[in-house]
Each structure stands twice: as structure tokens, then as C-alpha cells.
Image (cartoon, rainbow, N blue to C red):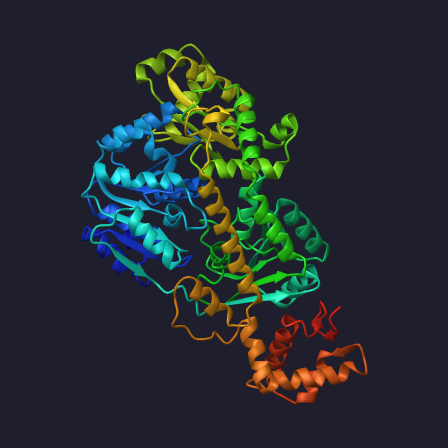
Length: 629
């Protein structure tokens, strides 16, 4: 493990999981966000002969994993919906006949005829299922394609299976094992309790002001999550106007801009990033000191994953969620709109087929780029209803929506050296291009390599357009397989296009999915409104009953005040309330002098707690407090 990852020892429960897998046992691993799930299948993949098949629903995360493994000298490939049939065909051959150690695939790939045929020829040592909660209809992100894993197992019944997730209730834990046909299986779990991470939820009159105050009073790197791209831009603009070190991120930005923003945050050039939930997945930044939520997530699972990105270095960190009196109503409306009427879903499905000029009975496993705004304008649909209809059609297994995941340009030489030479002698610039590619992209005859047409052009003194033209020419001659970069959303049909009469949804399934969404939303609201320790509420949701109060969350602080357990906090509250009867603002120095304590930081800490409980408001300098506006 040290050779490839630089670690001298496993983290808690990792070694138990790896040993179980190496012993050939089916295993369900429950590790919190940041618990190191990928190591649990990557190590066995290297120890045993053959390759590990990794099933993951997250295309961006697959690409990141593959690139990171390649940097460590580990042969890995990913097959996603963004690839051409020829590219998929070649990669599957590499998995059979090459020295590939990890093959990442999306769950939708599992039931294709091509994959099943090639899978039977592969020397598979382990099947790893990432985000395994997706296999359960009781999970918050059900993906019907995950059910194909059980059929896959029947083709290789003696291969152990490792399922991994960071968010599963007891009902989902049972369901995962049943759906994956566990044999002599085991559940290995690390407690989801994070002693260094304090969770809090605050009902506030002005979320922007409270977040601004928090940023001025707390140091370190952080993430602020908003529900929409519009909300991200507006909050970031407001905080920038207040001279905060802020940038923003969402999936609608082009790849280079997203990459630069992410790199600035990782390298501490930007202290805080305001983002949709598109940010943070697969990013290993251990020193995130806080995660703030400007909007309420729809589920506890989503909140727990996002909040869990704070404090991975096991040093103190905070996860604060701010909401106002309108947010709960907005959340209910949002969840309700996730389930458009069935007739509307059918209408959007039919319009989609017309948009792609797709005949009935055609299109299975075909992939089409889609600009959703243009589609909405063309057919007079609302953007949100189209998005939610497509997501429901994905849940029911009719199609897959890829939401604008960036894939770099790729190239593989399919010709022989002699065939290439025949083109090189005809054109000086072509000769320079081919020679540069052969020198700088090792293995281009054996596998697809990432290329950057602009950088290649700079090196050989051609424009990007000229490089692309020459690559397209070689592609036309079938000497290379050139796949240009893509940053567009795509729709992939998982079945042939069906007429309305054959597009059916079980009323029970529709109702069950909607009921489950509302149950999870209600659990989120109960978390916000509960006066119990926030950590206890979260852990109980995931089936951990034997837990003690954390002592530091918003609920625990309030309990201390009400019970008199914190003398200084209660005395401060009384003193400030008395002072506010005489004046609207109080100097912080006056409060410190009054209590005549040498521990100035203790007083300031208590003042911050009072601010979090909506008792007071601290100004931007930290030198004055006032009544809450």
C-alpha cells in the first residue's frame, strides 16, 4: 500500500474489509464520507490476479479515479455513456487481453449485449459496487440499472462482491444484501459518528448576514452549498461585495473555468467556494474547516455526505445549516415538483424522440447531445418539469441523463507504423504532428490517451483548428480513433423509443417513489426542528442508537443554557439582556472587562454561541454586539 498510496497503515475498519474480500466473502462496507472506501477495493484488485470491476453511477468520479490510479502507475480504464461504440469495444478488449487492474463502468452498461459477452471472458477477481444504496428502492438515489448486478453475478458466481456506501439506513442495508444475492456475507461498518465535526441548524431572519458574520469570525477553508446555480451566483456576488475571499462553482461553467476554480480552492488561493452539490464529490481536501448550507438539502443522506466533507483531517470542524421561515415551504414545493404528472412525463418523452428525429423501435443504447433550454423553448416546456421528467424516466430505466460531465479529447492509433508513415511522407505538418504524438503520448497504440489539441498546436507551431483538421482527416482514413472533448449533457436511450401507448409506469411505483421522497424530506425537517443533539438525530437515522450528546451543536448549547450547566454562557446572556435595556449596542471589550476573566477567548467563544442561537448579532470587526435585526 505504501508503494502506491504512501500510507503505512490502514484507517479504521479498512483492513477488516480488505481481509474479508481477500478471503472471498461478500461484504457490505459502511464508511462515512472521507472514510477511504476506494482503498478497500483497489488494494485487493492489486493483490489478486485479474481485474476488479467497479460499478459506479458517477461519471466524473470515475474519470478522477482512473486518472489518479494512472498517476500511481496502476492500469485502470473507465467505460461511460460518453464514449463511442468503437471506443467501448477497444477498451473492453483491453480489459480482457491487457494488464488492466480496475475497470470502471456505469450500471447502465451492465445489461448491454456487448458488455455481457466480454464480461464472460474477463478474469475478474472482485466486483465492487460504489454508492451501493442506489440498488435499493428505499435508498435516496435509486438506480434500476443496479439491479442488473444480480444477473451479472450469475455469470461468475464464485467472484466475491464488495458493496460500499456512506449513507444507508437499516432498511437499505438489508435491501442491499438481498438485491445483491449475498452469500455468506458480512456487514462491516465504521460508526458514522465524527467526534471532531459539530453539526448545527439555525433558524435565522437573514441567512446572508449570518454567513457573512460566520466568515469574518472563522478562519480556514470552507464550502457553502446552495441549491441552484442562480443562488450560487447571487450569494457569491453578495459575499464578494463584502470583501470575502470567495469564488463560485457549478456544472454550467465550462471545464477550464471549473478546473481553475477548483485548483485555486485546493491550493488555498481561494478560501471559500460557493457551490451547488456538483462540487466536492471525489475531492480529497482534508483541511476543510467548515461546510455551510444556505439551502435545505432534500434528504438527510445528501446533507450528511455534503457536511461530511469538513474535517477529514480529524481536526475540529463545523457543519452549519441556515434556514428561514420560508425555506421549509419552498422545500416541500421543490420535492412535489420532482414528480410531474404522468401524462406530462409521457409528453416530454414523446417530444424528446421527435427532437432527436428518432423512429419508434429505434435508438436503444444510442446517445444524443441535448441543450435542455433549447429543447424547452422549442416545445414550450418549463425547464424544471423537463429536468424532473428526465430524472424520473432515468429512475424507471427508460433513459439515462448525463448532466454535462466534461470528458477530455482522446486518441488511439489503430493503424500500423507503415500505414502512418505513408501519410507522414505526404505532408510535412502531418509528419510533425504524428511524430509529436508518438513521442509525448506513450501507449497510444495500445489504449486511448487524453490529448489537448491546443497544447499540441503550441508545441508544433500549428493552430488548434489545424490540429483538429488533421486529426479528423486521419480519423476519416480510419488510421486513428479520435474522440473530441465533450462538455454537453447527453441523453442515452436504455430501451428503444416507445410509443405513448407502450410507455408505462406502475401507479404503485410512482406513488412509492413520491411517498419515499416526502418521507425523507420530513426526516430532514424533523432534524432541523428537533431540540435533540444534532449528531444523535443523524446517527439514529442511520441506525446507531447508543450515542451520547456531542455537547457542542446548536441543540446542545441551548440545553446548556436552559439547564444552567454552562455558568459563563448563562451569565453572559443575562448581562447582555440587561445592557440592551439601556443601549442598542455594547462594546465587546466592556463585556470582557465586566467578567474580569483572563481567558478572553472563552468569552468570545460564548459570544459566538449566543450569536448562533439568535440571541445577539456581532459586527464585522468583532468589536461590537447588537440586538438581532
